[in-house]
Amino acid sequence: MTEQAAEAAVDQACRSLRLLPTIRTQFPDLVNRAANDQMSYRVFLAELLLAECDDRARRRSERRIKAAQFPRQKSLRAFDFDANPNIDPAVIHHLATCDWVKKGLPLCLIGDSGTGKSHLLIALGTEAAMAGYRVKYTLATKLANELVEAADEMTLTKTIARYGRVDLHCIDELGYMQLDHRGAELLFQVLTEREEKNSVANASNESFTGWGKTFTDPRLCAASVDRLTFGGNLIETGTESYRLTHQPT
Image (cartoon, rainbow, N blue to C red; front, side, top):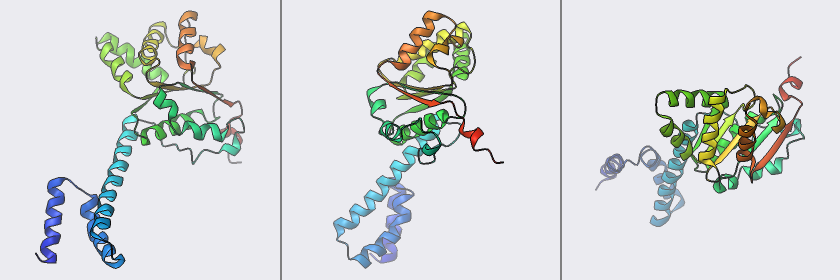
């Protein structure tokens, strides 16, 4: 077989085996590098297959991040820990290992607007997606409205089960707006479905004593707090807004 025929055969085989685009596109460069470095056949094959595995892992992470439906990109690398001394970097980086997600534990991020709650919520959710976990992000009010609509359309069981299947459910802006009694009850059903099985991370601008504004039924409020905190982590981000203190003058 000539070199030209071999290259065409590799291209066709990659298409048939769906080894695209990685092996097909990287094969010529790897061949040249193998020749220059005098790689053995085993090393060359290993390099080729590892390149394919790495690229597939990257694409899976991208799909999981997209499926989470984060409203914007946020990373821990971009978080300014120096601007908020209330937040311990060691604690956040430990959470980034996703051990709490593996164990199905909750996470609460509580603090005033502009203190980094949503940034950390999205960034930690992104870390979980990159680690292979299924993640879903929702606003609390939007989730409640979706559940009410599902109940009206007789699809509530299916909707709750869909939220129950993800490994990490990130609920943002819990406490910003009062939920009507029906919406609060349905949101509680989602929390109950996930209790001690899969993680819920939430961000709220209200301390637990103020959650009565969101869950107006005292018993429902207490039960919701219990499900969102039991055995989990609490991060208090403080009261000083990063956005206000870093506005351009």
